[in-house]
Length: 556
RNA sequence: GCCCCUGUAGUUAAAUGGAUAUAACUGCGGACUUCUAAGCCGUUAUUGUAGGUUCGAUUCCUACCGGGGGCACCA
Image 1 (tube, helix red, strand yellow):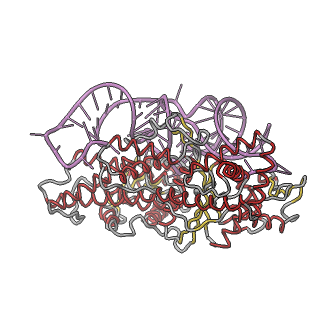
Image 2 (cartoon, chains in turn orange, green):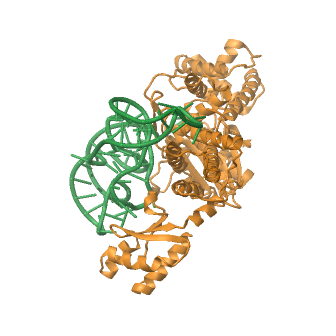
Image 3 (cartoon, helix red, strand yellow):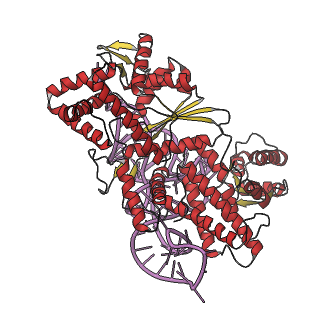
């Protein structure tokens, strides 16, 4: 449709004024009262023609009005926009797909292989609010990718060996002995915190911890190694449980320890061509035009740093999956780190950089002190979830535990996803986490209400039908019909927040309609149609929420 | 010091270079003997400051101010 209108405008412009190659835009106005499409062609052409834009627009409008039967009306608005309103039949044609499985599915990345990496846990450190944020963004991007026709696989990159891990192992060995087998993740988290403290205070501890670290890196058989292996297994199981609770699943893992071994080899193989030696370390110095900093890849002790590990990860990722697009999600803090790593990767395998896409999220800052933490001020994901689910139960005593969980998760996810990716989120549990207004529960409530109406119709023997359109539902129809375009935009730009904004507006439009118009009344035929639109709303809301990693409960 | 991100109602967010800057929260006011009130209706802006580009700037450019992050052996 868009290209049809485009060529139409270009043709009319040529015929009427004899000009071509005008770089005009054709957009979908955000305000529905401005039609389905709008063009600024008259504003652009006015300089070239030396005429008033409104005059040009009016002349064009007269020809365009009868150019295509699918265009219901064309109008001119100040200061010279031409607005097109599509015929209702075009909109209803789009809505005819609403019950198909393909509703919300696009072909944006059809035939492509996409790899999404997110939620990378730090073993021995519990899943905290930062992970929750990362998972929310990552899961939504995964769902968008899966709805794009691409072959999608997911992976996570657990940080398994580090000095921090050695510190925790030191405490566990000392406190519980070599046979220790973990049963609660909090014990590991506490050991991590305690280890960090003891390490700072005591030099003999430092020596022992470093020894442990060496043994873990080298995987030498020792009490610490076998204890570590048990903890690692436990940690991964814990990670999978909490991530499953959020609706995520990972097809595979690449461990930081593997990436470190690989990265070190890779760096050495490209020294001194790409990397150079400096003060005992091996570093990469980007070209000055890149405005990036020099980074150490292998430290003076010969160990791979974070940058070498990420370089190794690139090689392992591409060897294993060979993706056309490799998306990885991290905190915004790491932006310049990855710019350096990818710049270095350019010299080894340009595809690694060209096929990589770094999406980052901001941080959550806290105003309220409501959520305590076992980890030095950083709230744990489980605590945050528990607090929110508790609030849901307080609000509605009849709610099932499953529904309360769904609502709580949606409340948190939508707070994160409604903001533009990359921006910090000012998280005040008192106000940000509202269950009213622009919120996850509001969207869920709207879907539940719609489904309840459909069921009510069923009881009355009225099935939803879109066969005989009635007056009054036009705006809802146009809004629902935009869903596929919104999904495409989110997939193209990897920005879930457009979908959030859209769903909020859609919910408002439906609730407003609901407030002023009875859906089921004595007129069976009209009721059937209104139920048809109601059901379409339910489908769109459910599919939309699924793309954001949230589900809709049966009852609220 | 250098580099990157960011600044929008009292608050939290939105806005593909376009039209009257969009919502929500809070406050105040309202409707309902009616399908779920987590709902509906009404009521608030010098877009940090100063310039520039443009028919048109929250959006692009420059400078300044404020906030966040990064800048060699942590991840």
